Length: 559
Image (cartoon, rainbow, N blue to C red; front, side, top):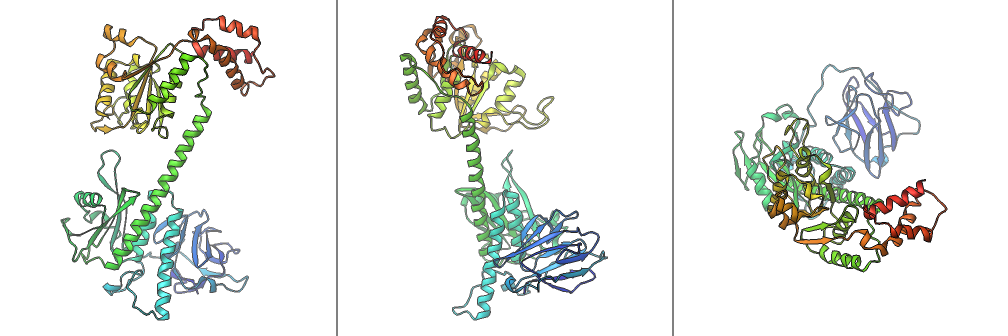
C-alpha cells in the first residue's frame, strides 16, 4: 500500500495509509489526514492518486508545503520524497496506490507540536557504488517477478518526471524538476544548469542542487571552467571530466567525477546540464550517465515545445494587429497599379528601399506591402517616425541604451533595430535624422551591427531597412543636411508616390471605400456618397492627399 511515514514530529514512526484516491491534509476535522499543528492550515494540501501516480497540491496554505526542502504548488511524488507540512515531515513510500484505500469515512490523525530540531538529512542511499541509481541497472536475460516489479517502478519514476516536465512553462521550472529528479534518483553529489547570459554570452549557473550533506557549502564548491562548457556546446555531445577540489579541470573518460550534457532545443544548444561529485571525487556511475542523458534530452524537447508555443503566441499577436490595421491599397489608377506591381517584385529582394512622396500619399502602406510580400513577413515590422522624436531620444529609440547611460536611463532599453531583428524597420521622415544618427545608421547598413547608447558591446542585427521622406533628399545632400553616402545607401531602389491630385480617378473609389470602412465606427444608414458630393471631392486639390480625404469622410459621418 502507498503510505506516508511520519519522519519528524511527536508521531514519528507512525504510518498513514492513503485514505482514498482524493484526500486532504490539514488541521480541520473535515480533512482525511488531520495534523494538529497551529502552523498547518485548515485545508493545507491535497493528494490526488490516479493511474498509479500521486500528485501533491498545495491549497494556498499560509506557511507552504515543502517537498525535499523546496516549496511547491503542485508536484508528482516520487518514492522517498520528504513532505514538510508545518512541523511534521512525512516520507512518501510508494507501492500500489490502487490498493491504498481505507474504508469510507475513516481519517488518519497525526498529533503534532513544534519539534525541537529539524534535520536536513534525506533518505540514506545504497552504499554499493554499483547500485547508486534507482534507474537503468542492466537486467539479466531472464527477469524474476521481483525484478520485473523493480523495472516497473523505475519506468513509473521516469513517467512521473515526464509528467512534471509536461506541466512546466519556463526554463526555471524545468530546471527545478530535472535537478530535483537527478539529485534524488542518482548517486551524484551536485547537479546544476548553466545558461548563457544575454548581455555578454558568458555562462552562468541558473540553478543547482546538492545532496543533503553538502547543503550550505554550495558557494565553496568549485565550478566547471567556461572552456569545458564551451567545448560541450561546440561538440553538441556529452563531455566527461574530472574536477578537483582546487578547481582544476581535465578531460577524463576512464574515471570521471563530472559530466556535461548539452540541452538541445532543435539544433541549438539552449543550456548545459552539469553533474559532479566535488566532495568525494568518486566516479559518476555509468547508469547515472544514461539516466542524466535521458533527462537532458527531455529538457531539450520541453524547451523546444515552450519556444514554439511562445512563437505561435507572438505570431498570433502580429496577425491580430494586422487584422486591426488597415493596410489595403485601393486604386484603379494605371500609374498606381504599376507601382504596386513593382512593389511586389521588389519585396522579394533584400534591397534597401526609399519611398518618396508628399504627406498622406500612403508611404507606410507601401512599406507594409514590401514587408508582407517579402520572405521576412513572419517577422516583426517596426515603424519609427524620425520627425516625432527629439534628437536627444532618437538614438536611444533606434539603437537602445544601457542602464545609467544618461540621466533618466533607469534600466536597459532594447532599441528598434534589435526589436526588428529578422524583419523590417520602416524609418519614416528619414530626412529629419541628425548627423550623428545618420552616421550610426550608415554603420548599421554597412556592417549589420549596432551599439547601444552607453554600451561597449557590438550587437549583430539582421534588418531590412525601408526609408521614407517627403523631402527632396538630393537637395538636402547639396545643402549639407544629409550625408551623401547614406543617401546612396538607402536609395538602392526608389519608389515615388504621386499625390492624389494627379490620380483623381481614385477619389470616387477611395471615398466609397472609406465610407464602408468607417460605418463600423460611426453607425449610419448612409450607404453611398451622393454623385454631387463626389464631384465636389474630385474638384478639390487635396493638399493632404489620401489622409485628408479619409478625414473628410470621417468628419462627415461624425457630424
